[in-house]
Amino acid sequence: MTESRVPDSGSLDCSVLVVGAGFAGLYAVYAARRLGHSVIGIEAGEDVGGTWYWNRYPGARCDVESVDYSYSFDADLQRDWRWTERYATQPEILAYARHVADRFKLRRHYLFKERVTAASFDEADAAWAVQLAGGGSLRARWIIFAAGSLSTPIRPDIPGIDNFTGETLFTARWPNEPVCFEGKRVGVIGTGASGIQCTPIIARSAAKLTVFQRSPNYSVPAFNRTIPDDEWAQIQASYPERRQKSFASGGGSPHEIDPREVWDIDGAEREALLENGWKKGGVLFAKIFQKQTTDESVNALARDFAEKKIRAIVCDKSLADDLIPTDHPIGTKRICTDSGYFETFNRDNVELVNLRRDPIKAITESGVQTESGTHDLDMLIFATGFDAMTGTITRVDFRGPGGQSMAEAWADGPRTMLGMMVPGFPNLFNITGPGSPSVLANMILGAEQHVDFALGLVTRAEQGGHTMVEPRRDAADAWTAHVDAIARGTLFTQAKSWYMGANVEGKKRTFMPYIGGFGAYIRECEAIRSAGYKGFVFSS
Ligand code: FAD
Ligand code: NAP
Image (cartoon, rainbow, N blue to C red; front, side, top):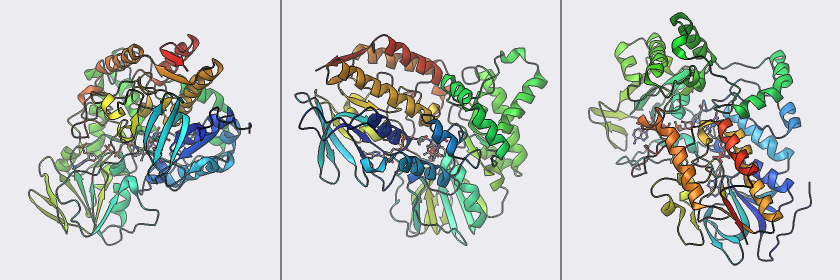
């Protein structure tokens, strides 16, 4: 390890402050320390892992294959860690995060069970003065905000939510202790990826499971399996090429879309490609054909195919009608990756309540009251999602030199340079923020790329004798307009998704992630870097 650089102002506690100990934060601590910075990390949880620390609900798994959804920065780590399954479980992913923390001795930098609540920028000192929830404060020159795109769960505004006297659980704040469903009447509110992953497992032991569905979602089976040794050896041999493909790809995995125009492929072959795509499993079903998420007629091919598959699984026709989405093109909300979700509704102990027909009136002491009646429950589980992409950073009272908060600066939607920096907030790097590929790509590789770019800016500033870097307002406006224009050319803006901020009352509706592709984004970043970080201003 390089000797830590002494902060260049006596009033600084560290050079780099990293917020968050998920995959992005852990890599940021590692990479900043490697460059010789003194680093402090702050994490609200008791330990590392981020998403995989908090979301311990039964059935939680990644939906990007583990061999890809893992760090690429260290070849020895990549060789030594043996993933057991195609899509690892939450405990295995958490174990990996812990292994990384141990291996690279990252925990020693962190204050756990602590939260950053506010930070104001002191221009005289070129430092962020940071307030912590525990009452402490510290000063840092640079902040790498790696606090997650999906880390602020939503507590839905349902009347009587506190009245329920049974057990209440949130998938995104699942307890560490085992949860028993045996013999219980369990309700799950929410049928996004989290609800869809936990439903089949709860149904196996609950006396009765009631799934409260407001909007149905497309879900494709994971076809999960263990990875045998010979396949593992092949993966190891091809890792460099695999990673190269991922960094050049649309979504951060080696998957390639058939290059042909869909209408140049004959009907039988199109069907075979869909079948093959379905059998590959999961989110990649959104990427079978060119133009699948930009042209409604192409999208309809995948949509009709998925509908047929769901109808073939669900025995009751009217139940299948309720489970098939009709309100968005397939893939414009993240396709869920399930293990027996639709099959679960063939069980006698499972009931679907279609909240579009029978809305929730209130939560009562004994369960959920809908317009048509009462559902008595022993346990109520909320799988109700996150204030995604902007919710975590706007909850910290960041104040730049102009005194404006991030929430005020983004009142009309997030405005960023490359999804990482915001004009008026110098020296603050928002990792995988809105305006970057973020949630549309493999987020571990995305975090590596973002942290490297952020530290590149820091190095460039320091080498030039500067203490501050900030994006130019016109450059950020141009980038934000570019992000918006690309999204408008797709079908994604038709869906009431969390990508659009549509799941949060009063949130500005705008498509937040950069949808031009992970590889294209990296090339943009490289071009900006090669042009001397065009669009960024370095100062002292
Ligand atoms: P996080 O893992 O969210 O970590 C952020 C950390 O910051 C948290 O631990 C939080 O406690 C902490 N924090 C937040 N605010 C503060 C504060 N003010 N002060 C101190 N600490 C703070 N992505 C994929 O690419 N593939 C997948 O398969 C996939 N599966 C997912 C499954 C689930 C259930 C969820 C919810 C998300 C999934 N994602 C997936 C997205 C996932 O969030 C990212 O892949 C990745 O784990 C994010 O890492 P991160 O370090 O950026 O953020
Ligand atoms: P989500 O996709 O936002 O789903 C939330 C669900 O709760 C939706 O069905 C929503 O219905 C419902 N809901 C919210 N408020 C409600 C209310 N007041 N009454 C009734 N229903 C309500 O959240 P998520 O499932 O946690 O997933 C979020 C993202 O995290 C995913 O898209 C994915 O990126 C990631 N994730 C990945 C995996 C994985 O497979 N690896 C697993 C979990 C999460 P409406 O749609 O009608 O709003």
